[in-house]
Length: 115
Length: 114
Image (tube, rainbow over all chains, first blue to last red; front, side, top):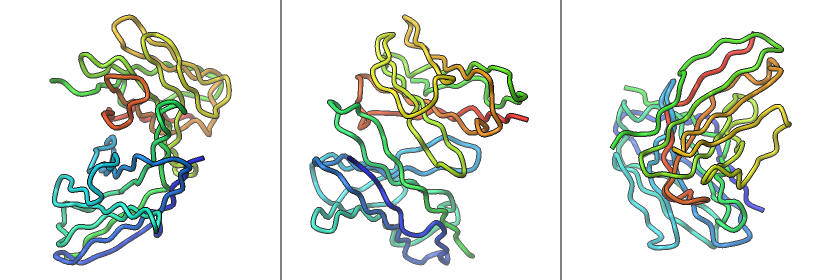
């Protein structure tokens, strides 16, 4: 069975500081992993995804994540936070196509950016 | 290409009523998945429809149902509404069944049950 744990429901950084949002997963098969961002009263926007190609994945808005199988982690980073990065971030793992092909989400991390 | 659209965007109902939400996928996409987002339970998978057939279902009571039309538009229905059904309902479309790696989400429908 697949599951996702996001460490820290709230993270606060200063503008220009490093953003690090933590995600650990559990999967019985090689996973597909995703990071989504959600702004208030909006849907989910895909930031990046890992689908068993390169372990370092670059996404939109300067975000990237590294798949580490030995640590079962897929942490999201951005070198320099911007005010517009303030939002809720969700890590997700996908069940394989032949096991339903659905997303299982973590509980989310709310990112605040201080000026 | 237009994105995934959901209607209505906001809805207020009272307990015991039923509600129907609509999702129009990206043109050419034949798979539509539905998710419920609540503060307590987070984001949870409801079901997926592909080519007018439900191919996967989450752990929700039978009051939650859905269907898909020949043009791939999907509706979900919740009968006998409960306060706990208040949530943001998101749909996502993809070109093939179960392809979460090519899935796009709509803006959601915010349902409030009073």
